Length: 259
Image 1: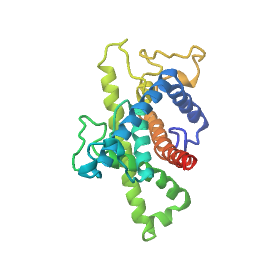
Image 2 (image 1 turned 135 degrees about the horizontal axis):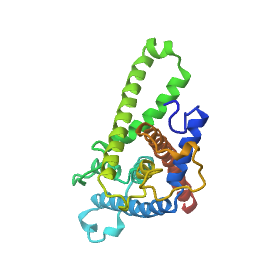
Image 3 (image 1 turned 120 degrees about the horizontal axis):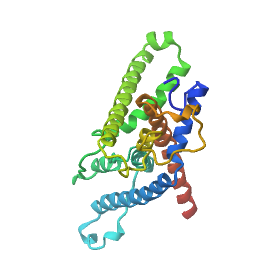
Image 4 (image 1 turned 90 degrees about the vertical axis):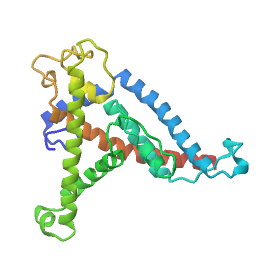
């Protein structure tokens, strides 16, 4: 991933180029509006799952008062899936339904959604955590250790397979969206998600052209699929892990204030 994205990009010229596009995609008012809108939608959806699971524990005598439900949950797991669903919809404009998948583990009545972005959303989300862990392994262990040390070499093999899965999944998502956009007439209103913004920026479909960029500036050309993949990868890694951890501790802090 050297020369791609932002997080591990050591090429300053490429880093500036990718940072420009990344910021341009997420700092628009429309993107922020989508974030607020989907936060409300996801919060209501999450509350619905909790109420449904809580009502499963009610006795027959208490079924008439469904507002008296109680539920013991693993907050870290729920917050992780909440933020995962949020990040996926903001980045790709499509749903992943990881909260629904986790809910289905505990409820005999399954929630089924059509046309999810990824069939195995649990694996998709976990793959980014494994990818981040893989970066650490490759930073601290040299070539000889990764290739020949028992235990480490098997883990490295798994991490490399996981990397290939992540790259392939992102490439499929990018190509699918690019094809959808190409089949739309020019001027059609497009989504405000990050992926769409990265694909159309500096093209004839770009409605947010920066007039302050000169002709010889590096940021005047569109992004390639590989460059888009690098930015999506950074967004998923930062969003799924960092945001979920922060979200968990915010909930813990709020609970302590009310206790």
